[in-house]
Length: 241
Image (cartoon, rainbow, N blue to C red; front, side, top):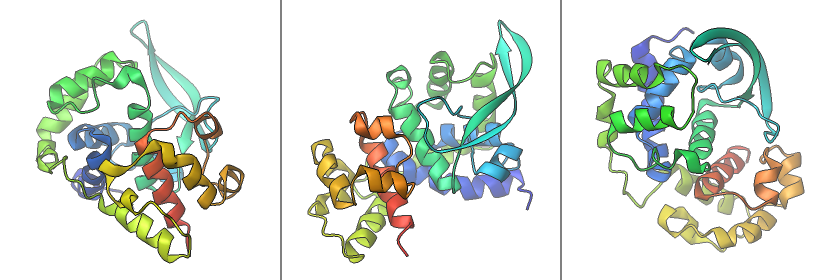
C-alpha cells in the first residue's frame, strides 16, 4: 500500500517516541528524517528493504544490503550514483539501527540529548550525516509543517522502556536463565554484563549464525553501547517462536 504523509507519521511516530526513551534522540528529528529519506514510506529502498533512512552499508556492516540509485552533492553539485544501503526485517529495526548509528559515533554527540529541534537538525547536518546543503532546513520545515514537536512531549526520562521490558520478559519465559532482571529498566543496563549476556544467548557465533548479530566488529571489539544492546535483545526476542 502507498502511505499518505498522515498515515506514515501515525505509524512511525510512536516507534520514534519509544526509541527516544533510550537513544535520547528527539522523535521529531527521527520522524522528519524518515519522512524525507523514505518518501513517506513509499521509496523503493523502504518498500524493498524496510529501510527508513538512507544509511550506507560500509565495509563494517554485516547485515542485509540493498543497492539502488541515490543523490549525492559534491562541492554543491547534484550527482546521481548507485550505492549499497543497510536493509532490515522491519521498520522498527531500521529505527533502532538509525539510533545506534547516531549514538555510537562521537561526531553526533551534539544531536543526542538535544531538546531543541532546530539545533538538533543543524547539528546532524554539521556532523556530516547528509551531503544535501539544505538537509537541515528541509527537516525543520517538515517538523514545523507537520507539527512533529507533539511527539517530543513524551517524557524521555521515563525509567520504563516497554519494548525492552517485553523483550527481556519473553526471553526469560523461553527458558533462558537471565540473571539480569535489572535489564528491564534502561537506567540499570550495565555494559560490563554484556559478554555474560551474549553467552547466555548462545554466544557470538550462534547469534551471527541466527542473524541476530550482523556487525561482528562491533560485538567482538566490544564497541557497543546500551542502544546496541537494547536492539539486540529486542531482535533476539522477536525471533522466539
